[in-house]
Image (tube, rainbow over all chains, first blue to last red; front, top):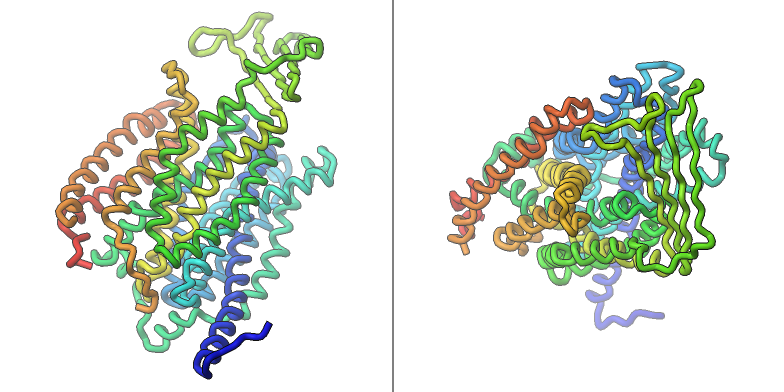
Length: 527
Length: 75
């Protein structure tokens, strides 16, 4: 189809727009691929946490267990903001391109090396120490990566399309999680259980190095961001970005506003939709892990394009309204959504096929003494649902052991397999939560970039982002679990919804601050 | 709107104090004194790293709001 132009100027503008679009696509591909790989690297550690603990952090060794806890919390909460400060400073002083090349390499090599470390059985105490060091390096690299990629793309983008172009960076966290689930799933299914346990778990870590090399080659050939290159040429870059960002009241008040008026709410909504939903189905509803993984993957896959949609929309109507509407809907929708989810896991009204029910009893024996009595029951239902319950009573000298409260020490593990209709309904309910995630997260890169001047942008936007996501979002599982457990012990009728008070309260405060204090009109990035 | 921003500054200061109280009594001290090593790490991170960032940050935000730093003419 040929394009018609009224005059030469219109033709030239059209050609210029096309050229810009083609060059920005290569910028987006280079930036997004690297960021996606970094998220992939970060998530495979979490996804393989159970097997990693058996290889590196044996539970019967208190020092190893201590290192394991440190690796889990420190990398997620503490090190990410430090990475943001360290690499943000570098990015504002020497450039965006070189800094996010460094973060990519650190992340890639750390991930690869985790896959190469001999197990605790082979090298002893050194194994968990090395894993901890590499995990901390992963956290540092992640802290420096996102701000660089978002800033780099934003400084290339045309002003009226900045939300749209940067939203591609926003898809990478979700796609990285999705890719990590797929790679682990494919590796597991391609190998026997013994092979995967013996060496197969290392494959997802090794794969990372191939992706990093490709991404490095692509990124290496990119030019520096035009706005930063111009600032550097004119000698307008900062000599002390940390001092200018956080020691200067004028800028620091905007760092605080970004954190408490936008990123804090975005962080909890992101974690609720993508992680709490998963853990709620597994731990509170007791649905089997494979079903949860597959329905999460469906919801994430279908929901991912919405990041781009809301990024695009934010160029038309503004970043603030979309993010705040997303937060507001999430605040009011979470409890009804999770109530519905919980009720879908209630099998009491289902028609049981009693003739198929199975009950078994067995004992574990160690050196001639009975250690556990195990009762297994299986129930089948007319709609295809199925429940397996394993009740384990721990014995000592032939008697049931007592817990701290003097009651019988009994462990009950329930695993539910839901019917197809229920599975799709759950996928839909998770998908709705992913939409909230895309509304608050899609426009936020453009929003943060527009808030800070070019000379200290990388530093100023990275810190609130990683505190909001790492601390407020990262705390969600611990706080929500505490609230659910307390609610259950106190006998609340809807104890299973208690964990939602944390994201609701944090997003609520964030909504009020965002609504009242944020001025959504500043879209300049070349200041 | 500027006066609402200022008045709300007090709310954010009170909220910061409330989070400090909750963080210490409900999560922090309980975890620090539970005797489990896993809880100890979490407690240390809550009390010595997370609470100062959250409470300090929200307190500063409230203080700036109260001082009128977010008023239209200060942008």
